[in-house]
Amino acid sequence: MERGIGAWIGRRPRVYRWARALVSPLHPGRGGYRLLRRMPGRRRVLNVGSGPLVYGPDIINIDARAHPEVRVVADAKALPIREGSIDGVICEVMLEHVPDPQQAVHEMIRCLRPGGWIYISAPFLQPFHCAPTDYTRWTLPGLERLVGRGVRIVESGVAGGPTAAVTWILSEYIGLVLSFGSVRVQAAVALALRVILSPLKALDLLLMRMGASSILASLLFVLARKPDSK
Image 1 (cartoon, helix red, strand yellow):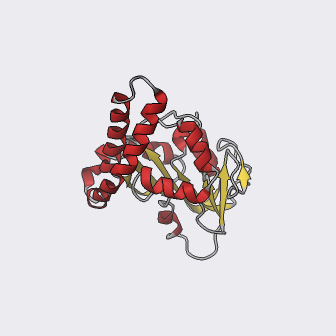
Image 2: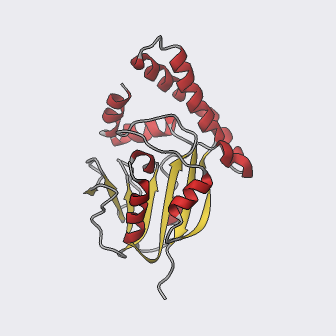
Image 3: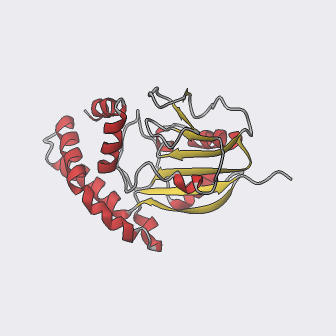
Protein backbone atom coordinates (compact mmCIF):
# COMPACT_ATOMS: atom_id res chain seq x y z
CA MET A 1 0.00 0.00 0.00
CA GLU A 2 2.79 2.41 0.88
CA ARG A 3 4.40 1.93 -2.49
CA GLY A 4 1.10 2.51 -4.27
CA ILE A 5 0.32 5.67 -2.31
CA GLY A 6 3.89 6.89 -2.77
CA ALA A 7 3.73 6.41 -6.53
CA TRP A 8 0.38 8.20 -6.78
CA ILE A 9 1.60 11.16 -4.70
CA GLY A 10 4.90 11.34 -6.61
CA ARG A 11 3.05 12.02 -9.86
CA ARG A 12 1.25 15.02 -8.35
CA PRO A 13 3.70 17.77 -7.28
CA ARG A 14 1.21 19.83 -5.25
CA VAL A 15 -0.03 16.77 -3.35
CA TYR A 16 3.60 15.68 -2.93
CA ARG A 17 4.59 18.98 -1.26
CA TRP A 18 1.51 18.90 0.99
CA ALA A 19 2.15 15.29 1.99
CA ARG A 20 5.81 15.95 2.79
CA ALA A 21 4.82 18.86 5.02
CA LEU A 22 2.57 16.53 7.00
CA VAL A 23 4.54 13.31 7.28
CA SER A 24 8.22 14.23 6.81
CA PRO A 25 10.71 15.78 9.26
CA LEU A 26 10.33 19.45 10.12
CA HIS A 27 10.93 21.78 7.17
CA PRO A 28 11.25 18.84 4.75
CA GLY A 29 12.92 19.27 1.41
CA ARG A 30 14.22 22.79 2.05
CA GLY A 31 17.58 22.18 3.68
CA GLY A 32 19.28 23.00 0.39
CA TYR A 33 18.80 26.68 1.14
CA ARG A 34 21.75 26.31 3.51
CA LEU A 35 23.83 25.81 0.38
CA LEU A 36 22.06 28.35 -1.84
CA ARG A 37 22.52 31.14 0.71
CA ARG A 38 26.27 30.59 0.38
CA MET A 39 26.08 31.01 -3.40
CA PRO A 40 24.44 34.32 -4.36
CA GLY A 41 24.10 35.30 -8.00
CA ARG A 42 24.34 33.04 -11.02
CA ARG A 43 25.18 29.41 -10.33
CA ARG A 44 24.85 25.89 -11.69
CA VAL A 45 23.49 23.58 -9.00
CA LEU A 46 22.42 19.94 -9.16
CA ASN A 47 19.56 18.63 -7.02
CA VAL A 48 20.34 14.90 -7.01
CA GLY A 49 17.42 12.67 -6.08
CA SER A 50 15.13 15.67 -6.43
CA GLY A 51 11.80 13.97 -7.07
CA PRO A 52 9.21 16.68 -7.84
CA LEU A 53 10.88 19.24 -5.52
CA VAL A 54 11.75 22.50 -7.30
CA TYR A 55 14.14 25.11 -5.86
CA GLY A 56 14.34 27.39 -8.87
CA PRO A 57 14.98 27.62 -12.62
CA ASP A 58 18.77 27.54 -12.19
CA ILE A 59 18.68 24.25 -10.26
CA ILE A 60 19.10 21.10 -12.38
CA ASN A 61 16.87 18.35 -11.03
CA ILE A 62 18.29 14.82 -11.40
CA ASP A 63 16.42 11.70 -10.35
CA ALA A 64 16.38 7.99 -11.13
CA ARG A 65 12.67 8.24 -11.91
CA ALA A 66 10.99 10.58 -14.35
CA HIS A 67 8.87 13.48 -13.04
CA PRO A 68 7.71 16.56 -14.94
CA GLU A 69 10.11 18.58 -12.77
CA VAL A 70 13.11 16.28 -13.41
CA ARG A 71 15.44 17.56 -16.12
CA VAL A 72 17.86 14.61 -16.17
CA VAL A 73 16.94 10.98 -15.46
CA ALA A 74 20.09 9.22 -14.27
CA ASP A 75 21.56 6.88 -11.66
CA ALA A 76 23.35 8.76 -8.87
CA LYS A 77 26.37 6.44 -9.14
CA ALA A 78 27.03 7.57 -12.73
CA LEU A 79 25.96 11.20 -13.20
CA PRO A 80 26.08 12.39 -16.84
CA ILE A 81 27.81 15.64 -15.81
CA ARG A 82 31.27 16.83 -16.81
CA GLU A 83 33.87 16.74 -14.05
CA GLY A 84 34.43 20.05 -12.26
CA SER A 85 31.57 21.83 -14.05
CA ILE A 86 29.05 22.43 -11.24
CA ASP A 87 28.97 25.15 -8.57
CA GLY A 88 26.91 23.22 -6.03
CA VAL A 89 25.13 19.94 -5.28
CA ILE A 90 22.05 19.37 -3.13
CA CYS A 91 21.16 15.83 -2.09
CA GLU A 92 18.29 15.47 0.38
CA VAL A 93 17.03 12.23 1.93
CA MET A 94 18.19 10.16 -1.04
CA LEU A 95 21.35 8.32 0.00
CA GLU A 96 19.50 5.76 2.11
CA HIS A 97 17.79 4.56 -1.06
CA VAL A 98 20.93 3.73 -3.08
CA PRO A 99 22.93 0.51 -2.54
CA ASP A 100 26.33 2.26 -2.79
CA PRO A 101 26.08 5.70 -1.12
CA GLN A 102 29.85 6.18 -1.11
CA GLN A 103 29.97 5.95 -4.89
CA ALA A 104 27.04 8.35 -5.18
CA VAL A 105 28.79 10.92 -2.98
CA HIS A 106 32.01 10.45 -4.96
CA GLU A 107 30.12 11.24 -8.17
CA MET A 108 28.59 14.40 -6.73
CA ILE A 109 31.98 15.65 -5.54
CA ARG A 110 33.51 14.79 -8.94
CA CYS A 111 31.04 17.15 -10.60
CA LEU A 112 31.97 20.08 -8.33
CA ARG A 113 34.34 22.77 -9.50
CA PRO A 114 37.13 23.79 -7.06
CA GLY A 115 35.46 25.91 -4.38
CA GLY A 116 32.04 24.35 -5.07
CA TRP A 117 29.57 23.48 -2.33
CA ILE A 118 27.71 20.28 -1.44
CA TYR A 119 24.76 19.83 0.94
CA ILE A 120 23.66 16.34 1.95
CA SER A 121 20.94 15.30 4.39
CA ALA A 122 20.38 11.70 5.42
CA PRO A 123 18.35 9.84 8.07
CA PHE A 124 19.47 8.68 11.49
CA LEU A 125 16.34 7.57 13.39
CA GLN A 126 13.66 6.77 10.82
CA PRO A 127 11.64 3.62 10.15
CA PHE A 128 12.19 1.64 6.97
CA HIS A 129 10.62 3.38 3.96
CA CYS A 130 10.70 2.32 0.32
CA ALA A 131 11.67 4.55 -2.59
CA PRO A 132 11.93 1.98 -4.15
CA THR A 133 13.83 0.37 -1.26
CA ASP A 134 15.83 1.44 1.80
CA TYR A 135 19.38 0.43 2.78
CA THR A 136 21.23 2.61 5.28
CA ARG A 137 21.20 4.96 8.29
CA TRP A 138 23.94 7.30 9.61
CA THR A 139 25.01 8.89 12.86
CA LEU A 140 26.42 12.41 12.57
CA PRO A 141 30.07 11.23 12.70
CA GLY A 142 29.20 8.55 10.16
CA LEU A 143 27.65 11.07 7.75
CA GLU A 144 30.60 13.43 8.17
CA ARG A 145 32.96 10.56 7.34
CA LEU A 146 30.89 9.57 4.31
CA VAL A 147 30.86 13.10 2.85
CA GLY A 148 34.20 14.41 4.09
CA ARG A 149 36.50 12.68 1.60
CA GLY A 150 37.78 15.28 -0.84
CA VAL A 151 35.83 18.21 0.66
CA ARG A 152 36.06 20.38 3.77
CA ILE A 153 33.08 20.17 6.14
CA VAL A 154 31.86 23.68 6.95
CA GLU A 155 28.71 22.89 8.94
CA SER A 156 26.87 19.80 10.16
CA GLY A 157 23.98 19.05 12.47
CA VAL A 158 20.30 18.26 12.76
CA ALA A 159 17.88 18.78 9.87
CA GLY A 160 14.93 16.86 11.37
CA GLY A 161 14.58 16.83 15.14
CA PRO A 162 13.87 14.31 17.91
CA THR A 163 10.11 14.91 17.90
CA ALA A 164 9.95 14.00 14.21
CA ALA A 165 11.83 10.78 15.02
CA VAL A 166 9.61 9.87 17.97
CA THR A 167 6.29 10.61 16.23
CA TRP A 168 7.27 8.63 13.13
CA ILE A 169 8.46 5.60 15.12
CA LEU A 170 5.44 5.78 17.44
CA SER A 171 3.08 5.89 14.46
CA GLU A 172 4.67 2.81 12.93
CA TYR A 173 4.62 1.02 16.29
CA ILE A 174 0.93 1.71 16.95
CA GLY A 175 0.14 0.78 13.36
CA LEU A 176 1.90 -2.54 13.88
CA VAL A 177 0.04 -3.25 17.13
CA LEU A 178 -3.34 -2.48 15.53
CA SER A 179 -2.66 -4.19 12.22
CA PHE A 180 -3.61 -7.76 13.24
CA GLY A 181 -0.95 -8.93 10.82
CA SER A 182 -2.19 -6.91 7.81
CA VAL A 183 0.50 -4.88 6.04
CA ARG A 184 -2.15 -2.66 4.46
CA VAL A 185 -3.83 -1.87 7.79
CA GLN A 186 -0.47 -1.19 9.42
CA ALA A 187 0.52 1.27 6.66
CA ALA A 188 -2.85 3.04 6.73
CA VAL A 189 -2.90 3.45 10.53
CA ALA A 190 0.74 4.61 10.61
CA LEU A 191 0.13 7.19 7.88
CA ALA A 192 -2.98 8.53 9.62
CA LEU A 193 -1.12 8.87 12.92
CA ARG A 194 1.82 10.65 11.27
CA VAL A 195 -0.64 13.25 9.97
CA ILE A 196 -2.43 13.57 13.33
CA LEU A 197 0.84 13.91 15.27
CA SER A 198 2.47 16.21 12.74
CA PRO A 199 1.80 19.48 14.67
CA LEU A 200 3.95 18.17 17.54
CA LYS A 201 7.01 18.55 15.31
CA ALA A 202 6.87 22.28 16.03
CA LEU A 203 8.66 21.35 19.26
CA ASP A 204 11.72 20.65 17.16
CA LEU A 205 12.11 24.37 16.48
CA LEU A 206 13.35 24.51 20.08
CA LEU A 207 14.90 21.06 20.45
CA MET A 208 17.00 21.32 17.29
CA ARG A 209 18.85 24.26 18.86
CA MET A 210 20.14 21.98 21.63
CA GLY A 211 23.55 20.45 21.03
CA ALA A 212 22.50 16.98 22.19
CA SER A 213 19.60 16.77 19.71
CA SER A 214 21.77 14.83 17.25
CA ILE A 215 21.61 11.73 19.48
CA LEU A 216 17.86 11.43 18.76
CA ALA A 217 17.58 13.22 15.43
CA SER A 218 15.36 12.03 12.63
CA LEU A 219 17.49 13.68 9.95
CA LEU A 220 21.09 14.94 9.84
CA PHE A 221 22.97 17.15 7.40
CA VAL A 222 26.45 18.04 6.25
CA LEU A 223 27.43 21.19 4.33
CA ALA A 224 30.90 21.02 2.78
CA ARG A 225 33.10 22.80 0.26
CA LYS A 226 35.56 21.44 -2.27
CA PRO A 227 39.03 22.95 -1.83
CA ASP A 228 40.08 25.67 -4.25
CA SER A 229 42.61 24.56 -6.82
CA LYS A 230 46.18 25.60 -6.09
